[in-house]
Length: 376
Image 1 (cartoon, one colour):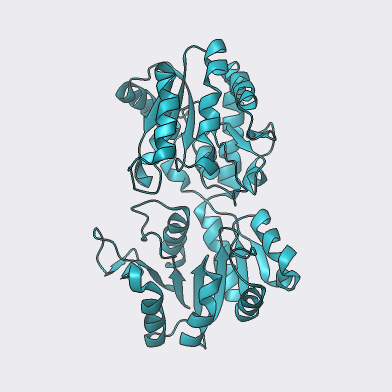
Image 2 (tube, helix red, strand yellow; image 1 turned 90 degrees about the vertical axis):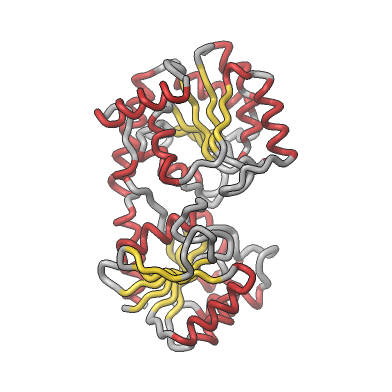
């Protein structure tokens, strides 16, 4: 089959600027291209050519300001059997007009079918037009089918994944070496490290985690909270909220480390050097890909019962789900309980790695997508 994978207008593919959707497209395309002809469309970037072929994939990159227009022109000029569009249901009508003979698959990574995002008329038209909708979590699937019950027989959850070979748990030989090297490099030595990875935005909740520090360090004065991320992918500019975080952190300088935007290929080592991973999302998150990364790195996960995040957590086995997501005391309590018990941390981390190997490798994701393409 000749397959087109279409990213949103936000970030380029490959994911040199980060982005969960971009990582998803890049990783699955490299596997699908072994069996099919694959073209990936994304926005242009000064560090990438407008067209190239890499690992069997043809990449076509279009100016961000003319992206949708450029896509329609490209789809008119080349026939695709399947067009897989990410996260833009409002584009389906225009793209289908440009490629009337192609079958469309829409993958939904956020609440794109909510009332604030799409009208009922446009949503119903999109659902009628596409052959299949795949969602990144049951939570997102339900946001579609609750409002549009007719989408039920066309909608399927396909959980995202992680490159297992890039993550090395601290109990492996390679992981132990990376852990020692990273701790020396960062000057964190024998600290007990709780890691946050994500955008520094209010909905991600890093301020809540910072407010938990006094209770954590009272019991564990050798602890360190490491925050990895910036206000937006690849953008280290400081806005008012980030200034607020830095101010909170400055109150506890001995116990907080901020690491700005890190390229995706450099992220795994930061997990390896850590002891636990914390996702403190305050919003109804679709299902943050950091959960897959933490599992692959063999870290116990603390996450919130928001959106789809808890769907990949077997509570008490590979992580702990916090129901009182906006309460700093809850984070302190759970973090302290894990810092107290190294054997429990190791057990939960190993359970997480096993779950990731069983269910969340990119091979499984790509296989499910190929099954979808071949079934429509």
